Image (tube, rainbow, N blue to C red; front, top):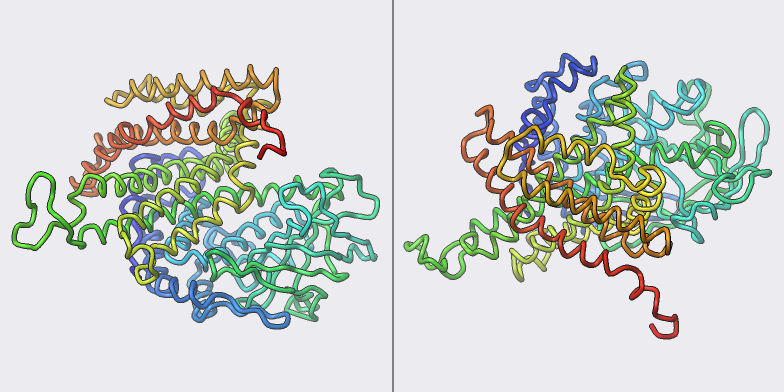
Length: 590
């Protein structure tokens, strides 16, 4: 199985030449010492570390998987040593608060580290990824005493974290949560209930696991308004802050899954486990959304990583595999056949993967920048704009990036042909592993309903808001040969949005009927904007990355506009057919 280096040059191009990381930090007034050289040195070192230590474990972790016995989960061979080396090298604490042992570097670098973790070994990536989210939530919402007790170990990676939402009888509808929390004095509670699909709920990588658990207080109102959030450690810390006695919680089992087998997905039983309230009672869901929104962005980036890995593997194979001759005559007459990269359809599959990987990276990093604006900017208008953008783009990032990852990894298998279906080359694993990214943190349909029902109809009042204004400003202020097409698709997006709003006023089912198609149309248009930005940046290139690199960017942008963006026409057509053909069939007629 290939363990190919991550595309560090592409990361540099987006960060420096498209999104101007130096100007970004100077404007924010933070991390001003992080110039392009420093930023890319850190990225390059992270890539080298993971290429050497995580990449070689990927196939083995998939085949060996996690093992459950009693109340113990053993991770695949090599993960424990990898995790220890990862923490000792300082990667776990990259953007952590120095007060708790962190390095105080940028959130954007942490985002890229998560991308690289998944690129090299997706089954491994969730262990540090969820810990980062748990740490951020505790930093924002926990009382000082809990911060002092738990953040130092979570920041350095000595302890890991989870989030425990789903129960056997409820998934996305968290209003049905019935895990119980009983106050027992001294600001402590007993937590009783069962949670399922808990990523990293039990493992052997760290000395302690800190669970963030949604549960109900005795007098809680029904539904989502009656949910509270609790910190429940696997081991209670002793007076010195070290691991003490075992709490009354355990993994009852682990799930046997389609993919991502190196990641432990647990059924967790809490049996009067001791825990602490975070925030006010009944505010748990609102607080947990902080971690869930970060997880949605990170899940989208996991989809991006799978797309990139699939492309890199398929490209290497296509350059090496000899089969048939080019339609325009032999390209390598001294060999018995030409490499399959000469064939038009193979190029279609490769360029589709390339266009998704590189364009989606720009979209994800743009959102990462907006999170940093929210964290650090002193400009209230900039913060408000960033919050509006983040609210609108988060479901698109999560769903679009993961859905096209399924397409990309399928193309990767097709490039390999029959060799893609067997395990030897590792290509089929990327398809299996990527599937869960479309389900994490809410399915594609749930993300689409969030976009159309909550964001577009409720928050945006039927308007596209800040992102459309940004695209329009780009078209007005920048001259590229792609602008006329981008304008036509932006106009289409406005038109379709208005039509959905008008129809929804007459029939609420119109929202659900249009939602997934609308999300995908939105993703394609936004991705078109980022490819136009990359085209402009490549035209004005700094010359640092090589002439072939910049020409490749220009030509991939044209490919995207010619071969992928026109999908919006079909999506518009399906949206405008409305809800009737979906809702007119009775249950007995299925």
